[in-house]
Amino acid sequence: MTKIVRTLIIIWMLPISCLFTQQTDNLITICRVKYSGGGDWYSDPSSLPNLLKFIKNNTNIAIAQEEARVSVEDEELFNFHYLYITGHGNIRFSEKEIIRLRSFLLGGGFLHADDNYGMDKSFRREMKRVFPNKEWLELPFDHPIYHVLYNFPKGLPKIHEHDGKPPQGFGLFDGDRLMAFYTYECDLGDGWEDPDVHKDPIEKHQAALKMGTNIFIYALLQ
Image 1 (cartoon, rainbow, N blue to C red):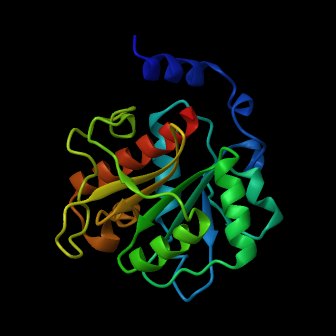
Image 2: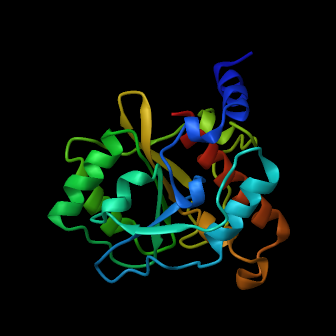
C-alpha cells in the first residue's frame, strides 16, 4: 500500500475538523482571492460552486457548497487553507499583502493559481516579490497531484486553446512541500463552469472537475 493511499484512508476516516481550522459553517471550502491591479478576480462565477459540489458528490470530504472570498489583507485569511486565484488581467499585491501571503504559504497554506488567459506575466511578477529566491518548477507527469484520486498520465487536461501551447503545471516548494500550484495554458476554471457557458464537451467538463478534485485532495495531504 502506497503512502498516498494510506494517507487517503486516514483522511476518509478522520473527522475533517481534525485536519483544518474552522471555516464556513464549520466545513472546509475553497477561498477565492480578491486582488487589486485591474484583473477580474471574480471571473468564472459558477466554477468554484460546481467544483465544490463535484467534490461533495464524489468523495467523503465534508465540504461547504459556498466558496469564500477574501483579500490577502483580511484578518480571515489564516482561517483558510486553500486559496484560489484566477483572472484575465493584471494582479497587484501591496507590500502588506506580499508579507502576509508569504507567511500564509510558509505556515502551511496552499495556493492554486489558474491562468484564465492574461494573468501570467503579472502573477509571476507578484509571486517573485513574495519569494524572490524561489523558481517555478514544472511538475513531472508522475507527480501525485496527477494521480491522487483520478489518473492523469499526461498531466493537466487542455480545456481552452488560448495560445495553443500545451498545458503545464508549475509548483513552488518549501522543502518537499508543494505550497503553490500554477495551472498554465489549461484554464480549469472555464471547465468547472456550467457546461452551457463555454459549450465545452462534457468530457472536458468532467476532466476539469476531476483534476480540480485531485488538486484539492492533494492539498489536504500536506
